[in-house]
Length: 217
Image (cartoon, rainbow, N blue to C red; front, side, top):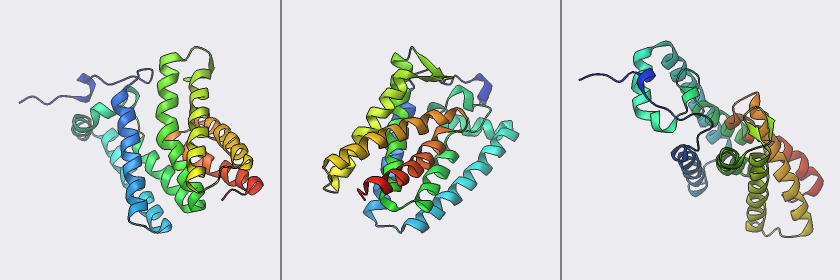
C-alpha cells in the first residue's frame, strides 16, 4: 500500500472558506469550555494543564517539521482541519492551547472566559466573512469586512455573557462596545503572531482594563 506524502495532499489555503476547520475550531473550543465549567475545574490547574499541552504540542510540531514520515502521518489524520500554509509550518493548535492557558492563568476567571469565547467565535466568523465579502484590505490577510464581523461578534458575545450574569445596564452596553473593539483589534494583531494566541491574550488584557473603568465584573 502506498503512503500518501504531505506534499501530494490538497490543503485549504488561507483565503478558502474552509468551513470544516471553522466548525472544528468552535466545536473543540466549546467542548473544552463546557468540560471546564461542568466539572468546576480550578482555574490554575486547568491553565497549567493547557500550558503543558501546548508545550507537548509544540514538541510534536517541531518533530513533524523535522521528519517527513511524522509529518505524513499527522497530515493523514489532521489534513482536513489544516491550511496549506501549515503543511510545512507550525499549526494553530499549540497556539490555541497556549493562548487559552495564559488567559486562564493571568486573568480573572470571568474575564478569561469571555476572552476565550472571543477566540471560539470571533476568529472563525471574522475569517468567514473576510474571505466571503472582504474587499477593502486594511492589513495583509485582513479586511475591513472581516474586522467588522469580528467586532459585531465580540460585541454580541459580550452582551449575552453579561446578560447571563444579570448585567443589562447602559454601563454593560458601553462595556460591550469597548469589548467588541478590543476583540477586533486583538484579531488584527495576528499579522504578527498566530491569532489563536493574540485573541485570548490581548483581549483578556484589554477586557481587564475596560473592567477597571466600568466594573461590570
